[in-house]
Length: 308
Ligand code: RIB
Image (tube, rainbow, N blue to C red; front, side, top):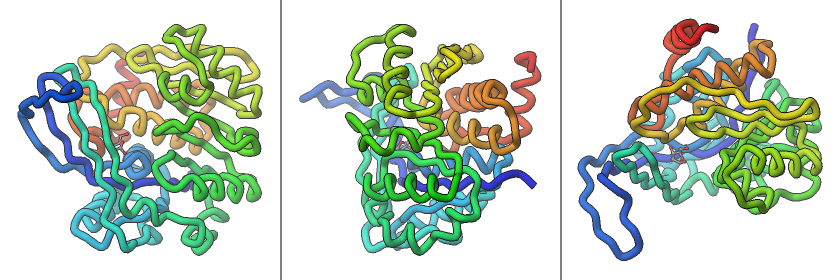
């Protein structure tokens, strides 16, 4: 039996607007389409991990509204254990996502019920922590809940993956050494390590700062260039496939979900990064968050065509 993955994080309804170019301050632009798509970094990672064959449970909070019901149903249909997702008193989290003609996005999140993913709720769901092998978190729920979950998971000897998105300027000092994998994109890495730069060397320097603070592995997603893994063995870039990108929304989420699934199947770090690159390279060729996440068969076919 594959190992169990627990995802603790956000669930949002994404309001996606496509446009030629992003508005600058004070500008009004015309959008071409408006679509509602299930999203939220936590839910996207859960959806990806389950579609790719993982044994996945999610903890998080939605509102007692139509969007919350839709979210839970969508994740359940993906194969996620949604039993303990809480229905809070606030509205389901919302994200307003602008996508330009190059597939680049900008996102504003209104947390709503995600704020109710609090420590008392996580304590009520302690069995989920006890029964899992991997815990994966992002940063769209209250920070104190994230740090509680990391501490609890560490106490129980679980493997911890933190996707620091959106990135804080820093984490509490005692948290770094509890993280097995931190998975920022380039911008999030720079925010976290207080650096500036766009080159591979800049990213390696940034990652090394996180290693010095105690993180065991830094896995940076570097867009169309793939991913950079930095740890005690050194730094290595894993290039990704070349594709025509239409929308990068949830590419990082799919990468994280795929990475943890591969680890849970006993694949090596290297195989897990290659699998994650393959899955997220499919995501960017489609629109939306959970609408763009591939299944296992498709991902395995892409890997085979790619020569793996
Ligand atoms: O990573 C993409 C996600 O970020 C979107 O689905 C949106 O909801 C925000 O959480």
